[in-house]
Image: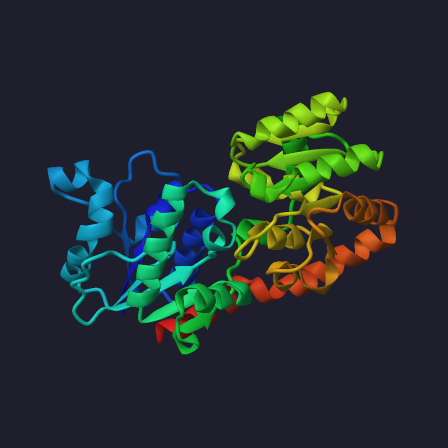
Length: 370
């Protein structure tokens, strides 16, 4: 089978959609090596390392016009490339499919990660909301099959786009295998020195934006007089200024560490040394950092409701995202009870085995009809 992927995010996004894209391509290439895989991308310039790609077929725009207007190529001219390459199945990995499909016998599959822009429009600019809506609605309409990464996302697709449930397949996403390996003492020491990690800290990972709600953790540390530091790993947005301002106002500067640029290979060691991983996001399609933390055997506190119990399982603690007192109680409970920390870590690690690559590869293969 000749399978094509929308690989732009795999080459350009360091987190989120990029991680999902790279992971999906790597998993299928590893567990189903008999397939022929084509990676369609607007450009390889300034792309991030993606070793498996060197063994696969990469398709880029060739003409001067297509190279110059690469976004247009990806949206409107890619269907011709798909037909030319005689692709049997094309998978849009980031909620999009090319327009003007001249696909012949090619089946179209799209992964929808979330519809946060529909549920929480206040977090997005109006023009962005409309672009996201149009792309997602078109993809859901044109796809032969839709992959939803959680039950929450599946129900949102049905609710907002009136899609027949039989068209949607639930396939959980996993995380990079780097989080599933043992972390050596040397790796931990390297991370401490390189990023100046405090001796005791709770961790939050993800774009530093309002929706992720990391200010709640700082407030809990301050108001609950909790003796720990907060380490945040994620891309900068203006919301970071709010965190820094709060830390300065309440004399927490020495207990707030924000790492905007991290070597991905170091991230497991940063996870592994956290006392708790805290993820008080308002809404997610899945929440990959939660399973990354559980693979690294770190206890998790996250949001009550939505997809979070699906991802975090029975071993995590859940709090109201707007209730500082609940966060204080949960943090104190875990930090004061080593036995509870150990239990949460062990049970979380057992639970997260369902997100291993082998399971996901099998589920994807069923949808692909290998």
